Image 1 (cartoon, rainbow, N blue to C red):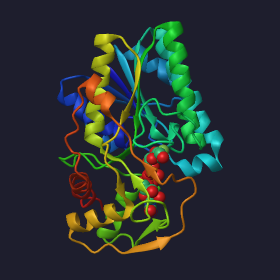
Image 2 (cartoon, protein in one colour):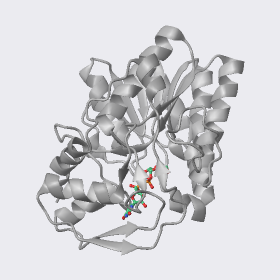
Image 3 (cartoon, rainbow, N blue to C red):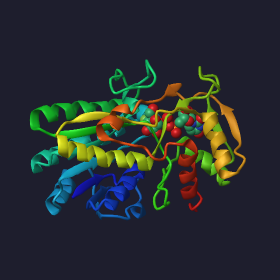
Length: 322
Ligand code: UFG
């Protein structure tokens, strides 16, 4: 049985669906602070908080857990600068609680949601796993701290981990059973789709004077179902090889903010009003990753790598929202 911590959230709920399709049983542990109970459509739900170590112990006592996938984290970069304590407490301290119980219970396999934000401002594109890690905000720093802990726990206690550094997770389950729903929403694609759906007046383009071909920031959007598949492969890899490792998970293609808006107009058939605005603090101009290592070692083959497909799946889900 696999424990999915944060399995009521965006990426965790997609993983939960895909792993259940493979006949693997899951327990979903989530405090529902940001997650959605109705996203837990597969497996068994246990409400609990990583801040309370007895909540964690209870789940491990109740189920035969062989491996843990950990998605429960706060992810607003700007908020992490304003309120770092919130981020270090949840994303670092609470992760240490989870690892503590895993060690107590002798559960060895851990798949961790890391981020391209651990690299900081890129010194070369595409970013490989060997790129220097100099995060520029508490969100990225906290994720890097956990990566450091994982290395040391692996050496000392034999923990086997895969740390997956996501680029921009996007899109939704192609069958629209789960999708992206953040509150507040700050991500580009769902905000654009709010405009397409008539729920927002316009989308602000944060910065049009970057050193990129059209002046807007370039990001590497990776479909959430492809991300989910990579987690399953990473777990299999850990269980088969016993080798801990780090993997970038991205698409390898960069799209500018303007390109995303144009593609969304094509996919939705709606006119999307865009307003030029100031740069957002802390946004690197270009973030594009190389995922060759995941493709080679995990045999990962992203299926939904066209931007139009990513936006189409997001739109199909988004249209259903009230
Ligand atoms: N953007 C806009 N207008 C908006 C929202 C976003 O122009 O209203 C732009 C941003 O400036 C950025 C791009 O769209 O250039 C993508 O922004 P998102 O907020 O969707 O995503 P980020 O690239 O900022 O964040 C992602 C993940 C984070 C992770 C970060 C790493 O969501 O969890 O990458 O830098 F930390």
